[in-house]
Length: 497
Image (cartoon, rainbow, N blue to C red; front, side, top):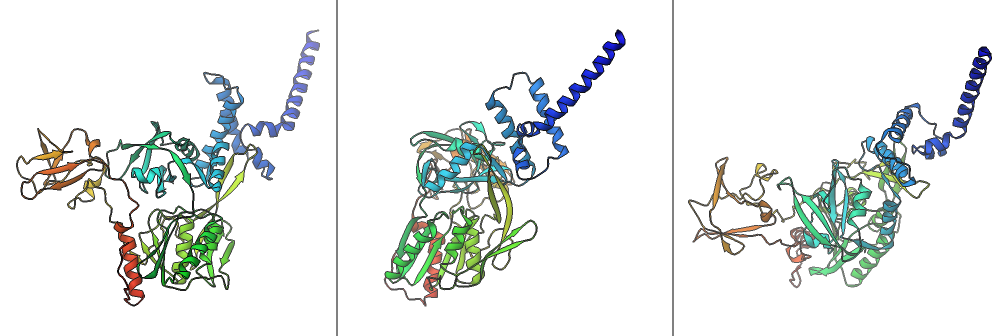
């Protein structure tokens, strides 16, 4: 009898094993779906044995984690986390995952407006970075600058925050406040809090245009969308009717946009030859050419760029520079020479994958290098807490708020926001004298003035907003001077910008 029971046990065990194998094979897609690789099979990609580690980790979390993770939302977040981790491991800051909300946010931008503060952000050197503040928006007025590092969003650390998550947190309803903690070179490591009230952000391709002195047309292109080329074409035709003799195209703080839009804009200025080359990983090259008869402008031209000019802006400026139809002026651009393709996933999430790189018309690779202007003109704005005596060492984190006071001797008077300061303390460092203030955060954005007669140091800490003021734009002034020289020095009626 015992022998019969043993035989029955082994038969049952064998049948159970065969049943599990059959069920596992039949439901393999469902199992892999929990691991985020179902879409890969749908594309004809075989599952790799290396994913067994991911499966093992998933089982351990399900079985051993302190709390149950049984809800569909919890399982979905595990799936999203696995996808984010996999894409991050690629080592490319532009290859990333977007959950349905983030993907919808990206789609909203094509509709022309959304609730937010008006900045373009990205991941640069594994840090959440302001690529460009949009002119005239709350972020621009608050004083955010290209290159600023976002440390926190409403108190939440942004160090490992996904880009789509950051965008979702920054956007919101008009009138609501968001607090960004910003670090800028030379500031204390804890940074500075910016409380910014959200507004409706309108994405107009051209926010500013004007006929300047000597019939020099000026247009600031904010983004590259499907309406950029027709809007710019319309503006140029208007200038031509007004007798335009030269043209300035401003791409500063333009973070880019659609590749096809940049090509269409380039065709307004280039009559023949290549505009940009798109190269895939297998070396296949697609070249986009100008169209004969498409050029609508034949006057001296300057393109203004800076470190906030990225992606499509660099495609356009690189094409105009290589063709020789425009003089590029300003500062070296951001340096993004990669193309991302969007792949929709089944739940309306998406992954952006870097699939190609682009080369300029003369096949220059500008990724992480940027476009170097023909004429370099630095922006005159500097951090107001610095003085002419500051060195690179002085701008390192931890030195903010310590003004160099080499001109001061003894116990000189100090006025702080209109009030005299008592108990002044100085500190010697590298044979230079610094003024110490307990709360250095009060000195963010401060300006100082030394009265030569009384030797009283006047410190004002009121934040100075970035102004939409063309009269103080050093780069634009230089562009106008350059074009006036190109036009043969004909000044006509003198006017101010």
